[in-house]
Length: 101
Length: 171
Image 1 (cartoon, rainbow over the protein chains, first blue to last red):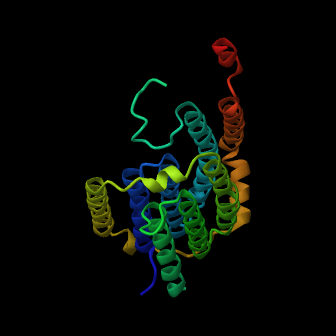
Image 2: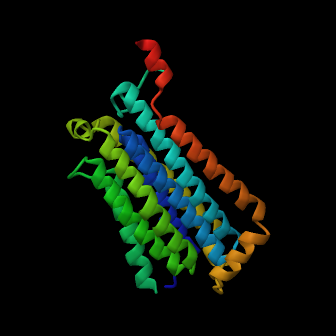
């Protein structure tokens, strides 16, 4: 059986759901961030698979931009987490329930 | 080729599961290490899809830069705290159920849409046309992304700088 687009899309969906699971069940902000990274990677995999099976490079350019934006997002997000930790001495979302610092 | 796909995707999914739900360790450092494995096996999948440039970028940017950033922040913060807490059993079961349902719906949709039958590859994914495209058709987004990186850099410095004015006021 040859590997088609469908196989890659299913891997991508399962990976996306794993990332979502991480955001839902983990209470540590950093691990939730890793779940976000997994979801972005799943989207990348789907885009690359579509780009390969349609003989069209637009998807790969998109993935390139997604990787860049994800790197910027991680940098800012982790800086926010560190700033929050400095104020509140915790990075567990069950302790971060008030909207005021 | 087929066996490589199965090996890489199994590795990706297994390590992805261990990032978010590891029954042996709740340490964020372990999660970060499994994230590295996930990303490396995913770049193997990119190679199978003939996206060689993206496979290299994936390893350089994610496994190189992003994970190091994660580990730095984990070292700055307290990880002992996390290990003392337990999973909330009810929430975990509900989370698994919800996510499993979502996965079932999307996979069913993919099956019904029949994308696998209509699209087959001839396989032309090289770095040279990608680079050409990036610097002609997508030149403006490329430059805007560089501005975005600058903004992110300034934002990080601003956020992680200690607020001196408020400390003086507090004194």
